[in-house]
Length: 461
Ligand code: SF4
Ligand code: SF4
Image 1 (cartoon, helix red, strand yellow):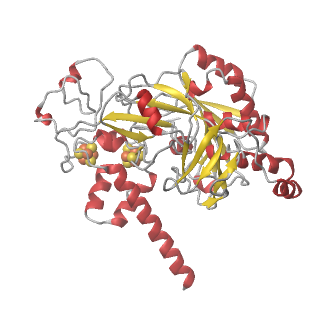
Image 2 (image 1 turned 90 degrees about the vertical axis):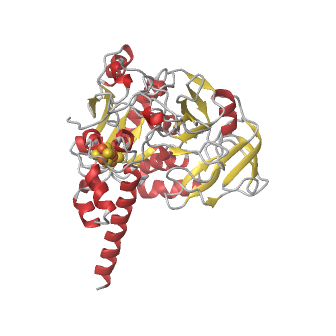
Image 3 (image 1 turned 45 degrees about the vertical axis):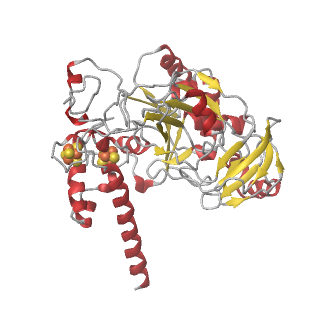
């Protein structure tokens, strides 16, 4: 496989592989919105007592993917805007909240394979699946052309695959076998890092007997683990049908749902970045109070928290009280209270940069203590070409930026903005700090809208 561009950001605060179990909470704040889902169809009433695994709400625009109660508790619907709050939380025996009538209907229509897919959806495992090209939730009853299973997460910092696999290798291989049983003949590509370690050797040994799994080893460089990049590098064309993509946590969730018939109620989430005193992975459930995580792990008085990694994470809003259902990591950066006086002029032996312009380029590699402070950036494009060098999609970000600046949308399309995988590297390395990634997401949406508009017009003619 050939990869282009890529760059590893050395950031302080890498979480250790060990996983800590968080104390049981008294209250859970479950956001009704997550990265991909909007759980707008409520299935419970205010004041209702629910058990672990009960369906609280569904996203009717995403195959009715459920928001499950991670613990037993009393439902409060109006206590906090855009959240379902669970009070008097208790950990009882979890149960599978499945609709018997719907199941017998599926058995008649689709047989045993249909029931497995229904279980994945109802027990919260399907939400770990992605369409490799679009990132959307694929149709659980659909037929993919191939499946990509990735054991890697290379963005600083989201939950690492090796942390999740550690001590769960048996569950992982069982989950892989369950996944294979859903398919007819479609290939499964299992993506691993091309490293020599005892643990990697153990994983390779475990899957050696699986003729149906094709092992793909890739360099540890951001963002080569990105599903879009992997699908392109494997020559899997978008036009030949959906490509399902799933990470380590998804395979473990499949095992839980199909082998044990248990709901997937907890997640492994990383808590890392320079604002964290002892970066870790934590075992935690959606809705867990963010404040409790802050009290336990955050060392700085003023911080900016990202839901996700340094490059693609979104700022955690002040109104978000609990972890959202798809959270994979929390990255914490220090937020300086005031501007750094003449920050741009300081030589900076403690700062690194893609351009190697600081004194730090004379030092060996080191993990940088990034903050949210600007350093004299925010300028027009200086045509340094760094963005093109790192872009894994092989497009010219600065050129697209210039077309966008002049509103030349047709040229933006011709420059293949559609290939952008939104990895955020171009914005990171840009010395002028132009928010290229964000501009390209907006441009992709605009072009998509125009295409839809044109096809509606053509149909009505
Ligand atoms: S243009 Fe897109 S794919 Fe290329 S570096 Fe920027 S965000 Fe990543
Ligand atoms: S990295 Fe920034 S300044 Fe350099 S060419 Fe790209 S857009 Fe222009």
